[in-house]
Image (cartoon, rainbow, N blue to C red):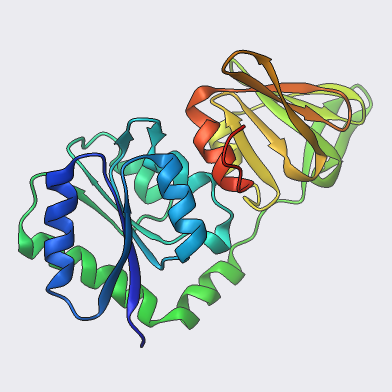
Length: 247
């Protein structure tokens, strides 16, 4: 296979230097660029379309995880998270990270992570089969006094968490269903729905625009007229998703 394009995303110069040094020892990989923030990384990924990304989790303007989650699936590189914090490992693997390196790591541990990533890239047909077989839900059901209604996801505007329930905007009305947003998100096609807040997701096709509410705070305006705030945590992910330099 041809040389693999990789990017390094970390706000600490020594950490970037260590990764760059280890990668330079492997002729299978070329470093396409480095970034010190989510914003820089989003632009870097858009420009170079790397197959592999080494990302810190805590960055000055957001999270490396949120950055990857905000990218459209075809644009997402295989991710290896490099961090000093172990509490995010479960979420990383839920997002299909190839490995999770805890700082400080050895050259041998780095080599193992890199080989795992290259192995995945070396078998694209196996990856495609997995993606093809993954099924996302197309409808959701909600209780009604006369039985149940089935909501087509293509008609849903937004889904907002409310304690142990989800408020679903469908058919010009708000419907309550029991569940968690995190669990539901795994069942929704990421090319159709995007997370904009810790407690809210919206359907991409129903987005009318993004407007500023007050300095530094923004909201998504939907075709129905409903507005959903964008939390600062997801600013970078939204910029990356829609290739925006700023909101």
